[in-house]
Image 1 (cartoon, rainbow, N blue to C red):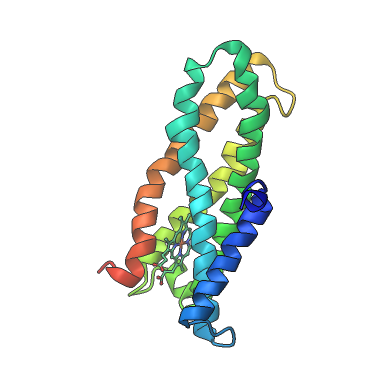
Image 2: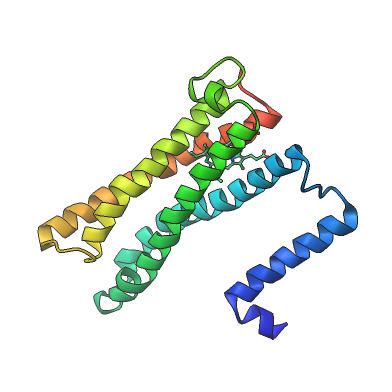
Length: 194
Ligand code: HEM
């Protein structure tokens, strides 16, 4: 067991093997069925979304409030090591969530209708647009500001300070939007709007 758990890749592999064993033992695994393919993308979508929003909430619930309590000489552990790694997974899980989410909508046959808020798809349409705005925010506002704030690109002291504030506030906007966005995601199959 220690051999598996001491490596992240082997741990993830073991998770997949366990999933495979459960699904094969108890049925419901039909790779050739379009319904299964749509469901598999839904699963990938939720996995990517959990990683994205998990990291967003990590920044907002843990990292940002803890920074003022960390002595200056220890701050580089966060700004030079932890934050860049977290931001890498944050950006790419946001991208993966958008791509898998659009595929799910398309495989469900309502992608276009949802994006233009047709009847029956208004809730998921609003949820999708909120998440698309959040992903644009991640890639084109939060990330460039974080690069300056963390010293990954050239910036003077006042630019760094301003960028750190912008990154914090725009990340707060995403935290705010994540609440209705997630409601609308899970509502579509369970308690749709209207
Ligand atoms: C642009 C980004 C996104 C798009 C295009 C998108 C699209 C979709 C679509 C089409 C569905 C299926 C709705 C249905 O008919 O049941 C869905 C479900 C869902 N999405 Fe998203 N989504 C996005 C972002 C997110 C994010 C950031 C999360 C965060 C965790 C998320 C979590 C979920 C969950 C939990 C479900 C429900 C799965 C279920 O009930 O089986 N989505 N999404």
